[in-house]
Length: 151
Length: 151
Length: 151
Image 1 (cartoon, chains in turn cyan, yellow, orange):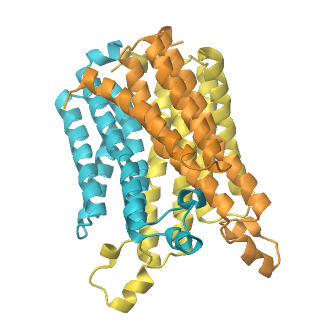
Image 2 (cartoon, rainbow over the protein chains, first blue to last red):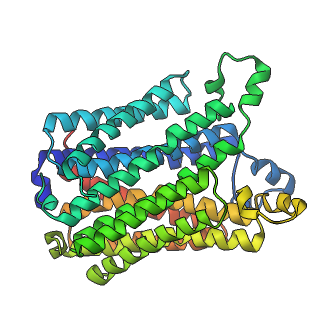
């Protein structure tokens, strides 16, 4: 194992970064599930062999599929910055407890965000979940910039 | 702090990676701003409590919102490769001044790209800004592959 | 060069991470190519100076362009988790041959996925290519979580 893993914070970062990445990746099978149950595909070759009339219906967008796709894109937009800034943050040597607090709150906020988006829960559940994740990432970015600023 | 931060190039990378990630994250509040001022939402639950007729209007797409969303996606497509390849590039031990040149030009090109996209400025401003960022990332990728090629 | 590069696995990771990132970045020029040959643009300023009637036609979406854009987004959704989880995986000190197997299969699956999507090849080529990449990433994530679990 690399010496980096002797650091508790880096171990915790690895765990949480992997968890939120896996959460993000689960959006793809979820999209597939909705595509098949709702009958809504994007590609001609995905509906091959069906009668012409049914094809047209199957190639229409469906609100449930579009909802999951927006949720997936929102994950990309928020989880990727968390992972990048979180990696640098972990290297700045924060307290283990402070770092864990950041990672746990972020992971929780994104899992709740997915539930709020897909079920969906009434607003402002989704907006709040999104904002909590944003604040965590900004807080880590602040520490990274304070520690490393080298323009 | 991790020993990696004893390296000037890695410090500079951390600073610029955080800056471009923050820039990317700012697209989300900007999208929200345009959604509210233009009255264009994607989700039923975001327009809850409005009269039925107004709901329909509020759920239409608006060109200004779509423009910011395209800009955000373009950031994801370009800034994520910069961060990944830039991290590996920083570890190959380039000159500080060469590395800083790469990072500064990239950050500048993406900030200008956002302005060119959102205002919008006449073409080819946006195309050029995008291409400059691409060239910087290719240049770093070339060094990473020269230094590490292990197929 | 950073001490990390004394590790064969990390060298191999750097090579493959750079390759799949470059592959992803090539989707952008490919989109541009289809936009120009198919005459389908998203932005008013991209068709400046054309007669009003032609402008309208040029601002319509075209299935070939949308197909490449979906492929690009699919890359983002799959290659980014590979890179993040792969970096952590490389640091856990796996066998060089096992790691190379993971990296090679993933890179191959994504290159084939692009061909299957853009040409397009009949299904289930694309679905299988996507699933192979997913399984590789899950396998690396399993090792990372086994090695680092720190909740």
